[in-house]
Length: 450
Image 1 (cartoon, rainbow, N blue to C red):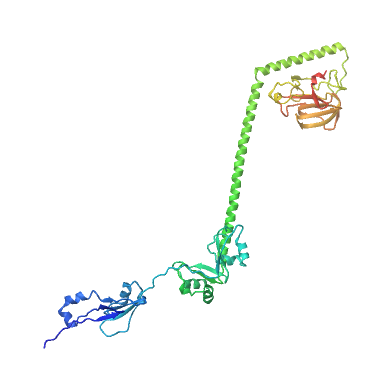
Image 2: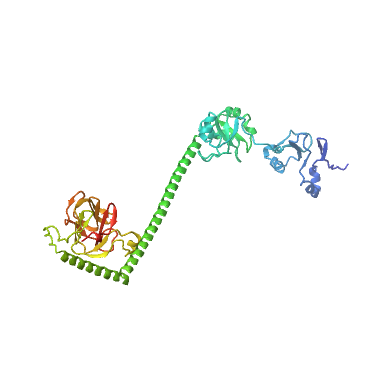
């Protein structure tokens, strides 16, 4: 009887569904029909329906397919696939554990951590004191802070109401186990503080590590605060220096403006001094002086009074006139009248009332006392280097000297040396400003001089 070659198939069922198995050709038949054997080999396994729990599937294979290949087809690691005990039949049954689908949930945080909204006037120290905490305890649960002093109204801070420690957020590549081990936290106390097993936490959840202090974080913020204060001090100094430079530049500008103004006034004075009008006035003054000298000489001859003999230390003075009971004499032996009482002959006299007369002479010409009196001022004053003498209700002023020869409080007699011609103070040339005040009011000296 001829031998029969039978092609058989194995049929498996799981969860009420049936699938066709993989048929293997007997060895004699595979030799006779190699093409049929090749057609059957590309499908080595059959996937059955998953169980009702939805966590695993059973896969029927021929037994020649490695577990890693089966696991790779389902996107799981090799450890998630395992052979079940061999059953009857030529195939093998593999159980593949599928990953559970991710469930969206809010990030987990320890129940002992509360939040506090910062109000105006709050600081880290005041907030920590309000809740009976140290600043380090407050920093440990607020690792997002960047400064010890900059907390603004409206910000939200974490407040530990239970165990003190370090509050960290699990980042990608981390897990609760690695954080507990990395910070050296106690596992049991960590579980108690968080109320959840470490394995149940995932990326984005918060983990409180009890008894782990944020001393290093505080030192970092203190160093940053010191650097900020130093930078602020440098900024203030730089701003102050910039203000100084601006003030210095403005002061220099004002000085230049004043210099230009003085230069303009001086050039205007030179133009006036050399002007034809000025020359005409000088000639008029000289003619006036000559005329007055001639009148004085004529008056002296008419009166036929003998000239008083002058002492060796006193100049020869002409007969004095009487003014309020005081006799006056000319304060200089040689002079030139250049400006009269109340005359507006120069710009300065136009701006300031001229309360005396100006007697021009070379620098160093002696100046003598026109009357007896007491020296009340000898030094710089309203008319440069000047001398004031007082007798009764009259005050005599000698201004613009180059040097004085008397001291304050000294008694002087008529004709005694007081000083020398100069050009101190507001002066357009060497001369003597001679002024008489009666009862505090200026009067024309020419009306009292002989």
